[in-house]
Length: 308
Image 1 (spheres, rainbow, N blue to C red):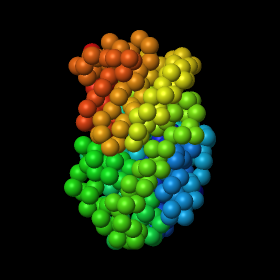
Image 2 (tube, one colour):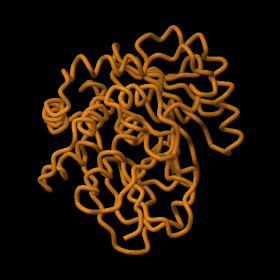
Image 3 (tube, rainbow, N blue to C red):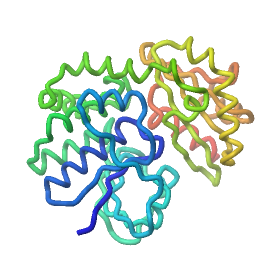
Image 4 (cartoon, one colour):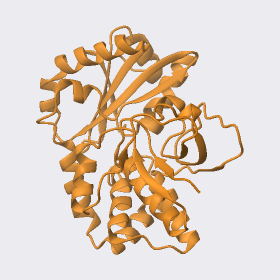
């Protein structure tokens, strides 16, 4: 069998990178020539996890050729896929998001479950197969679940996610609460990020009623540093919106400690943002208390607002 790339979405987060690593490892133990791949650069949080567990970042694929064998993890919408994916041979899909515009030529294995992290889904596949991950792989899976659930603060968190973290922490040999907070702190350090990098942080594209918009997210533990850069970040966001022809671009600025979000938006999107959340915008943002999840608490409302 030819090489199969296991790959997550563009602008990869910790779950996307870790899923490529963990699922390719599982497939390798089952005799499949699987290779972990990525469609973008790892962020600070992910780099912290990779360094801590001494794991190499997956192979970077800027674009895939026609017929390349792929397994997609942590995404299924075409706009989030590695360039060239539509002409690739997608064999499997493992995810925990809504089903978007995913289409295949042939029947494939698909597993999508409503849990907080795709690595929780993958951990279930490990247990079903009777395969134990290495200490390093368990550490990356643990890191992903902590990241996606924001150490169990996100409303997407399930009891299954919590159980998986406890089980994986034992294999990885870490105190998940201490390690998790250290990892989140590392990811929240934006001191050396440019406005352009912040504007594009963890960004995903969505389409509704023929309109495409982007929504990124930055998690911080102190709002002051990012608020000080807001004008430059918004200028970069406006430039990206114009260059890519988006209907709008949004940026979730999420305060991990306060457990709330300020949703920043580009010019012309105020009415849609207010309609989506039923709240008055102020200074180019909508304040969303107790909102931390793009998947569950932001994207569905924006998609609905554009569809109406």
